[in-house]
Amino acid sequence: MIIGREEELRILREALDSEYSSFLAVYGRRRIGKTFLIREAYGYRFTFQHAGRSEGDRKTQLMAFEASLKEAGYPADFKPVNWAWEFEKLKDLIRQSAEKKKIIFIDELSWMDTPRSDLMTALEGFWNGWASARKDIVLIVCASATSWMLSKVIHNKGGLYHRVTRQIHLNAFCLRECEDYVRAQGLILNRDQILQYYMIFGGVPYYWGFLEKGLSLPQNIDRILFAENAPLKEEFHYLYASIFRNPEGYLCLVQALSQKKAGMTREELIAASGLTNSGDLTKKLEELESCGFIRKYSSFGKKKKDAVYQLMDPFTLFWYHFMKNEPDDEHFWTNQLNTSAIHTWLGLAFEKVCLMHIAQIKKKLGISGVLTNVHSWFCKADAETGLFGSQIDLLIARKDQVINICEMKCANAEYTLSKKEESSMRRRISDFQTATGTRCAIFPTLVTTYGLIRNSYSDIFQSTVTMDDLFE
Image (cartoon, rainbow, N blue to C red; front, side):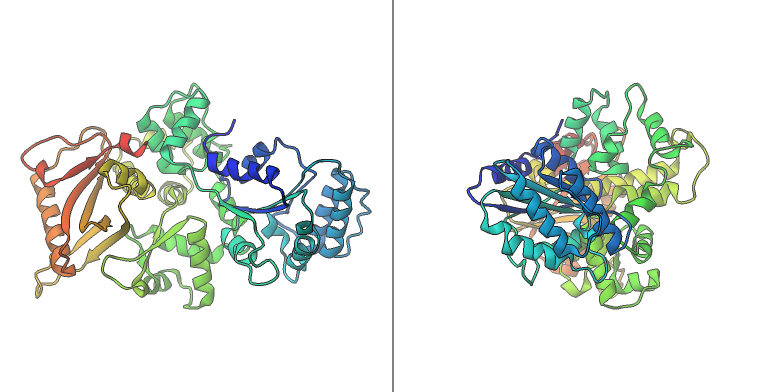
């Protein structure tokens, strides 16, 4: 059963009804459900399907392709010469097919593109010189290496330039889609529990499939991550190794970012990671961003060259907080409940969830149709200018001359604002107005789980967004 993905399914199925051949590119991070989506869309009926091997040189990849040809009914000889020859065999296989539309599905294409490979040249020749001249082919290529897919296929500057008919960037589920999945599986979890699981695994469908009926949420987390044979105990290392050929440099970057909540500038990252300032560093940061592990944002009022990089992947954040030191307690999570470590992590993780649900926050605020820019902002204390030193993790700058300064608080009940917190909020607003010189109206906004208790300090907030609003 497939949850959500209505627009993606429409695009895939429209290709079957097209008068001409279609070339579709589907990309998105590992475990996001690309292969499942494509198989479901086409009812598991393919003229030819193949998945690249995560490891292996050019010969290994060619032999695997040959095996897939044999599986599809082609009399393979297992003496592959090069990719051009393999695509000639694929043409023969297609010619033999009686299907009205020949659906060709090549998964994990980036793994097949080994050093000094002629793969992309062969693919270009197959599509430009043959398949596009027919009217009966649907070619789908897929990869988890998002940046590779963008540069080598979608934005290809060679023979595949503008050849892709449609592209699908498959994103993670939002909270509402995860709730739909939980209900479809017959799991008994309330929204607070769904939110907590989302804080660990984000909206990656694969991870939600490990939840087991009859177990509490802490029991499930222990079984999935901390038990002796936990299915996702080694997932962190496999995740990065499966996307990046040499993951060490990428891991240096995410480890550095895991230490600083607000993120780091490029210069700070270089100092913390030990990597050199180079084009390779730029490439690694772009790849991490395109896969959704980090985000790049500009602080309000700052130039693009002062951009900040921030860790966004919930599972990576969780791993560095609780799994890096390999705890040997099979009931680690259950035994850690209500500790200060959990409370600290909950606050950080909730902020990440909010940043992933800006559309839902805007909807609650009634500004879905208003052009906005999302920023974070900080300033250092400066006695000369009267700045106290402040950090704002989320502000929404609106075209209607209003800025929502958002305070994000994870609580297990309605939130009670104290006098100290109200004073802190006023100082941050004062710092922001003084440092930026903005003339926009400032609307302090609270994003929290269960709402706000009204008291003598709560009126500072113009609006309140709750957990239920994030599920919209």
